[in-house]
Length: 355
Ligand SMILES: *Cc1c(COP(=O)(O)O)cnc(C)c1O
Image (cartoon, rainbow, N blue to C red; front, top):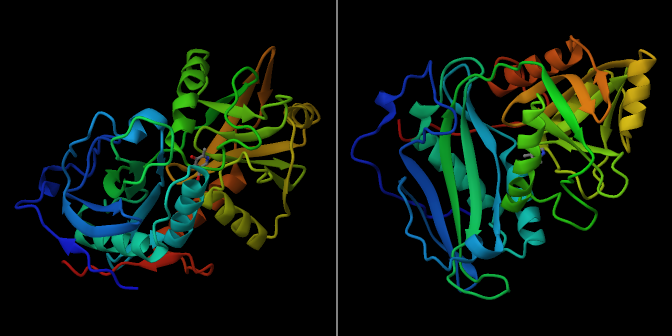
């Protein structure tokens, strides 16, 4: 279906004020946002308008009961300067899976993708040209109905914002394997990209940082030994020539980078197994010299190389080099910027119709 998205443009774009070689992280936004409202059981009034604060009723249900979910993705430019999206339909369907878990309505996938395309083509001047830079896109939905009481809201907003992001230099990271706090339990909300999951991770992450680590490595909620994932990344280990990543058991976020990296590794003739992995198995592999590398995968950073994992009374040295991780990262970036043939069929073009 083709939606009629009305467009109100800013009088003057702020893009000229941005130094593309020095983009402040997460604080710069493009001129416009896509926005639509859910009321009387349907999404209405899809529009692109100048990005601005939205008046919020103090009883807006998202503020009290936490019905708020989001997505994260990036737009790149190909060699001809054409804006491209990476697997946007995957984000659309994941948003709706998060919505199901949180008792929120679906956003039609074609509305999600059309909104993204129109916003990105309008804001194409904001896509940083530098290698490794991209326009970060943040689609999200929250309950804006004013109501005190415990039930699903009947009014929501779905918004897409865009924020230019400079190149991310992947330094080697250190993880803290957390045995006191948990991220997700079976039957919980671990599979949903729900705002509350991140609120609950803030304090444990601060404590890990105070110990000198970059991120938390989450373990299962019952035995504190099965590895789940990292802050906002899924995790891969290379042991004895084979890749292993935790299976999607209901408490792990279904990363789109994770799925893409599995496809890429298999195309490179590596064996990739999705299964349960314990922290003890990683300690053992490190001791007997079969732990070759480990990395995290996610939209924000691409691939983050893991150097070390700390846990109570022990430090696991992973590796100082991640040759396969590096190759996967370079290949993924080359596909996203159109420098390498998109043989997996992942990229979706967005015409510069407002040039
Ligand atoms: C978003 C996210 C990921 C990575 O998902 P991508 O689709 O690869 O960006 C992994 N874990 C968590 C908890 C996340 O929120």
